[in-house]
Image (cartoon, rainbow over all chains, first blue to last red):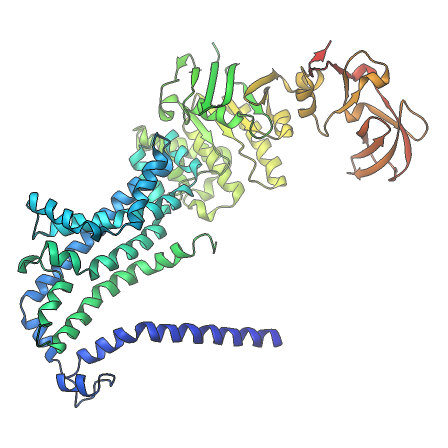
Length: 279
Length: 332
């Protein structure tokens, strides 16, 4: 009985710590969301108050939605994120499979070379990338962003996935070979389903920086038709006057897709993070 | 022409030679067991036969056809793995039928073949389950079923019983022996367990460090081992090796199986003191620390009342003893 109670006490303590952390972590998001529903005056007079009937105002959302391009920005962000994610996962998994499965000359060097990308930020190469994009006529296209983000996401994807793929049973792959499955079938039907939790982990870690990035859209695709949501929200931030209602509303809306995608991946993600620890 | 012929097969990983030239002929319908301690290259040899590893040199011939350069799927073989290696996303039925489906066999024919195999292994009620819903023994039966369905020229088994518990192991062993009789197929079986080798094999190939030490029927190896390694590896408990010089023999060492060593409370050729007794009911194993010959094992049939620290005398049955020279080779 005493043991049960101490167990209960420890559980409360653990939850208290976790809840405190959650509150701290979510507080900025919370402030953004509540203020996005308030009038401009209320935002400045009492930034931490929740909207009341007196201060409730949808002017921010109205401004954002009236600005016809907002849906365009949204769509651009979606296209860039989903396409980059697709390519990162596809090529990352394929490279990881090759590195973990086949013995060839330079296997280790190739793995290290790909892992280097984790340590060197891609932004260091911005000037060269811009020159390349100008030379290939890709400036102000979504393709430019997709290419850059795919390159940016690959190192981590290859690194994480090759570790997981090493754990996939050799016997299983060999059984497939004896049964006459091609290497592609072995990869897509046997190996990929078994590393799905790792894929979800990589997907989340890849997706969030891409969605939030301001740097490359600003440099490579600043044109109106290809602006992403993060860049698009900047129109409300002026040098002299900032339309805070609109900025906060735009940011609140921008959170939604990430939230949805996170919920989709999260079940797998938890399995990925705890893989090996919990069997 | 044998069902499987290996001619001077070698395999190196970098500078390490794992298989150092193996020649072997396995006859049609034979049950051939590769046995040896871990790291002796038996699994590598099996994987070379299967085509999962390329041989560094030599040739593999299956049913008169040189398959050295063919991929595994084209060799008309089936393999059963230690870890079962069932496809987790497929039902038992689809697991068993996949190879035929890949080969483009008609659906009705696949169904007939899987049902026949399921009948042989009593898998009928499990056919629509996923591998995750099966016990270890059932999974291994499905893996064996998957091999049968293909009606291959050659069955390959890679330590198929190692993951099963003791009771199930004996049961599955008998099942494999029965299948071999019923199918009359050529089988190559890899194990490190000499009991499995003795009970299943028509012919045993004893491997050590990438070389064939001896090939022969189980009783040939038991009664006529070529060297100390085979003599020590075949038979359980292990053979006793005595220093022959101390007993007035010409040879370097003399091998006496535990069952051919007589024990008495009086005097014997070798005096010693009992250090441990294992009573198994049907047999009793007595471990005797001798003066000058180290620890020797005596195997007695039935129950015996020896106690630890008792002084005993041991007398080897010289007519059943094996003599070896300094290099460990048998002297005849």
